[in-house]
Length: 402
Ligand code: NDP
Picture 1 (cartoon, helix red, strand yellow):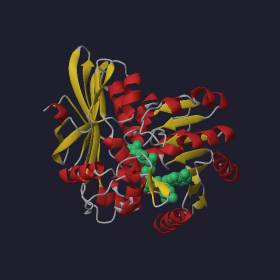
Picture 2 (cartoon, helix red, strand yellow):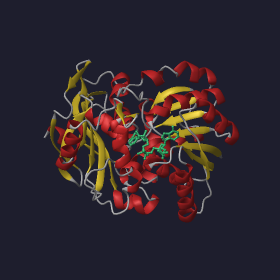
Picture 3 (cartoon, helix red, strand yellow):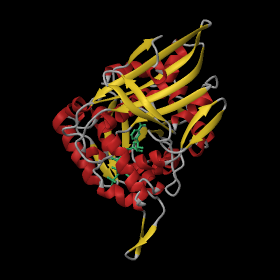
Picture 4 (tube, rainbow, N blue to C red):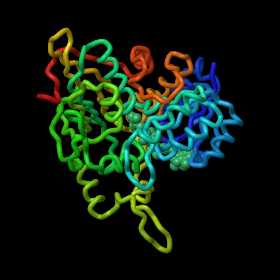
């Protein structure tokens, strides 16, 4: 039915390629392109062996619009799935505009030299995408992504008005390494070392990084220390659900992870300011990324589960109500299915689902959209079919409030 071009061959790109190949009735022709083509070839060989599907591969530097345009013109996809890094969002969107091809990503644009998370740059493409008759779906991973679909689902089916939203994200897995990040280390560490931020009574409240924390009890996992972070989907959620009085994002970190991070920060290794070193300028965080394990190498022997969900309090028919909707995902199971760990899987499967719904026309409208602006029902239905079963409960005490 459709040709799709996937950009980025890391942990997430690999899962997207596998899952598209496993839905080859929709994704009839797949190309995986990245900066290092040998990574694409390795994934293509795995897909051939595991699912009996041939995919094409190519080398591209997605920072260069002209290279992206040339590749799109050669392969002629209907949709580009961008699972490279947030730095590439704008050049890939520019190439999609020039060639009139739909676009999807899983993380909002960030400039390389400032760790700044906001949708302004990408929302600025709204009119141009509308005029070109093409769609951009932003942040279609798990968080951002499924968490916004969960919130939209709650708004549609459970509440007249939502007042308090807590997104809770737990990785209770063990990969056996002293220190590693579960997705791109550079992006992950930029995110965590920023001041935290949450929405309360119509404004953003800024807090020192990792300064608000408490144990939250996760389904089938139990209590884990969880920290308030700023996460990009909060920006679009408070815009699209203006009745929210408070919206926060919590993520778990183990003590060993935090200690490693503090040491690295204290010695300057997480800085994004270039420093002179042996006759050239290097960025300490980029160097750190080079010595840390790559996210796509963590899968083998990874045990335990992730649990990500939305806890919401609001009003229905004049009564106060609580609602919790979540997914748990097992690292060992996802490794068996697609050779990827659960953090890559929970990002890559929603990206594939968003693409599938766009290609089927279910989620197709010209312009630039966040996931909560689309009908949540078909997405939840696909999550249940594609390896991310969704669970929910009504009117139980929210563990974030215990
Ligand atoms: P990885 O570091 O494992 O992979 C990134 C890939 O992008 C690599 O293959 C890299 O190539 C490629 N790449 C980097 N720069 C370029 C470029 N200029 N041109 C072409 N390819 C390039 O990261 P992950 O797979 O873990 O993460 C991918 C994306 O998913 C990130 O944007 C991340 O923020 C997002 N994410 C979203 C989540 C969500 O829930 N929404 C959760 C987790 C991640 P090379 O191999 O040569 O370095």
